[in-house]
Length: 415
Ligand code: HEM
Image 1: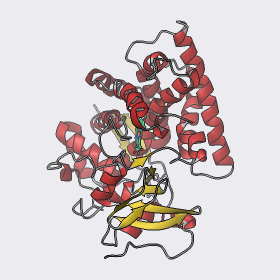
Image 2: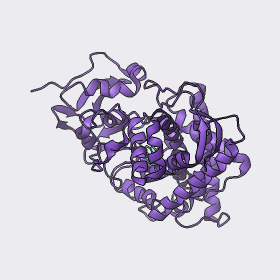
Image 3: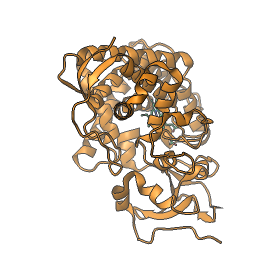
Image 4: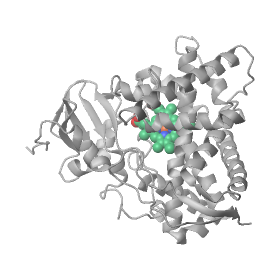
């Protein structure tokens, strides 16, 4: 029998910070199996990579999400007891609620709201000396997200809400003040949204059917009970917070358009190329490094004895760059998607598997929509210069981002 490779050291928690996005690829991809054993925070952890690893991770008969996420992540990024932590029928029922928001009409509307906001921001930017695309697109997306979700946003609160929604994302892995601020951002955001949910239920706030705030406020669980107002608030935040996070892909996309100027004309004109470009941005650039689940019951897979409740991590970044899946994975090449078969376990920046039974991100279509609207607008209507700056990004810092946030200057309407 072949031996399952393991780390020899007692604990590799620090290696996660040292190796960053390459923590799992560095270990698993050099071996013959798709599984590798290490120890993190005192636990024996199985690392999974490759298409086979992804299939196992998303097999809900063998993996679950109960206690898969550390408290510090729930207190900042996701919110407690929300969809990310659910399993089985309760999860499927909650997931349908999210998926019901993603109709073709709703996605079209999201594209249009995004485009409208790009036009509005371009006007504003034309009087600014320089614009940090990452910072500005966060506010652009906060406005877009709230309008799309049916959430009223007063002019004087836009900056604060934008800041809180992004701090929830950036603070979960931090320590010290940044982490504490992230917890506060979550509390403020939940308070804000819970109040709005109550207003919708009391008929004080009008919300159109099909809008996230309306659907979450009116949703009934499997027992026919409405969600606790706090829970409904958390799930609305699970729609608008990640919409703001798309700003990271927009900043990376700005870098790609600049580094590969030959892509610009086709992004501006060719709908199929625009789609491939957005897919390649999601594949190529580092965002989510890995995800966790727990083993449902003892079983053996690729010689490895998985133990009930053991923590398992799937190599999100590594699978998007796996040389066994992608030719020249470290080359930015939208054309690779010409003959892509839409596999559920290869392009997994937002999780893998199906949408309905597993935890794959229900916001994948909205993300693609927002990215297409943004990259189309940038290449078609936005004139700008790229001043000297350091827009490189690190694979050690998680989550990663172009260091400068991608700065542009001399912004003007092209047409
Ligand atoms: C789940 C990434 C945008 C809503 C996830 C997961 C990832 C992810 C990695 C976890 C998959 C898993 O646990 O197996 C991203 C990225 C985004 C993005 C990188 C773009 C920047 C969105 C958007 C929405 C959204 C726009 C809502 C409109 C959710 C929800 C879940 C989720 C509700 C939990 C699903 C579940 O547990 O069943 N996302 N996402 N995401 N995402 Fe996204």
